[in-house]
Structures are given as structure tokens and as C-alpha cells.
Amino acid sequence: MAVRRLTVKNIISRVRQTFPEAPETYLYNLINDALLEAGLYRTKVEYAKATTVKDQMWYDISDTGSSVDINKVFRVDFMDSAGDYIKIPRMLDGEILKMDIT
Amino acid sequence: MASNHKHPENDVAWFIVGDKLAIITTEGTDSTSVHSKSGDWKAIDEAVTDGVLIHYYAEPNTVDELSDYPDIDNAMHANIVDYVKSKLYIDRAGSSADPNASGTAMNLSMLHEKQWKDALVKFGTRRRDKIGGLRAVRTFDLR
Image (cartoon, rainbow over the protein chains, first blue to last red):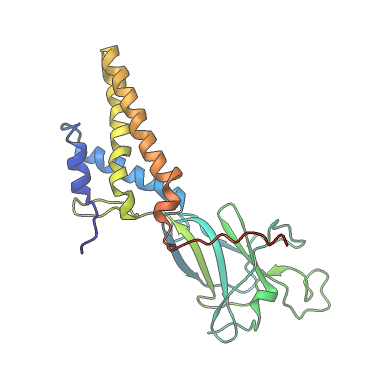
């Protein structure tokens, strides 16, 4: 049994029942705005790997500075000596004594 | 290359400030330093290729072809129509010279926006939740 999904074409045709004159580019923009807003409500889970650098504390996770679009990080694993990824704890306050800027 | 941390759950941690992820450790051998001894939090002490696995909620991919499927659960696809219509009705309300037509368009805009918000926020978790089956309720034993 096929899964019921709507393509962009289906969505635009439904909108054009009421707004037949709506420009296609504008509709694309609105659909992408809707997807952006939907992304704020935990709709898509992804994973990414990062390489650590010796004595580097900070790693960029911004949309522009990294290759991934991260909204919220909910878990981080670190590779152990056997090559397995092990969950590491999140420090709640982040107020460590020795701070680094790199 | 694997890491040298045998139990990273005990000596490696993370936190976030703004757009930066900090990876820190208590490991260290420099016993003579003032604030970098073993036990002090400091920057991660080794380079490990793909050493960190980050789990995160991501932004859906954008669409740019008529044949594309929106990158969210298909239960939400029909509600994108509501979002688009709510914005188009706002445009119509703002551009109409007739106050009655403008008011009607505004009401319809709010109706579609409510349907979108309800689908996304009010019922969103239930729609996206993949956990099924009975949920047992165990009452306290008051004996």
C-alpha cells in the first residue's frame, strides 16, 4: 500500500483552488517558510560527526560555519579507545574554571 | 583512529554557548601546571578523526522542484497548504480596497493559521510520535 504524500505540485494545486493567480516562485518561498517553521518543532533527527583538534575547546555548529543545519543538539557521543561512540554528559552551566577561546 | 579515552563518559563532557560546541576533558598528565592538572576541566586533549558524534534536531531541506516531497512527516504535508493560504489571505486582506473583503480575508487567514499551529504545536507531537501500543497505568498499592 502506497504512503500518502503530497508533492509540491499537489500543494500548489490545492492552493490555486483559492488563489489561481498566485506566482509560483512566491508559493515556493512560502512552502519553504513553512518547512523552516516546522523544523523548530523537532520534526527531523539527524547525526553528524566532527573531528576534534588537540587542545581546541570550541567547535562551530552555526548554519554558516558548519556543513550541517543544527537546530538543537540533544546528545553528544565521544569515541572511546575501542572505536565505539559513548554518550558523554552535558555540563549544565558551562562555567568551567579554565576557559579557552580556541 | 580511536581515541585514548577508555571511559569518555567519565572524563569528557560537552556544553554549548551560542553557536559553539565545547568539548572538554578532565584527563591530563601535566601534574605541575596550575590549572591543567588531571581532574581540571580543559579543552579536549587529543585529535580524533570523527571522534565526536552529534545527535541533533535538524532543519528540513528546502524544496525547489514540483516533484519534491516536503522534508517532514507526511502527516504534516496537507497542513502546509494551511500555512501558505494563511499568508496569501493576509496579502489579500492588506491589498483589498473593500473593508468587508479585507475583513473576511483576515478571518480566513486566522482560521488557516490556527489549523497550521494546531497541527504543528497542539497535535504535532502525537503525529510525529512513532511510539505505539497500549500505555499501562499502574496505580499505587495502598495496602
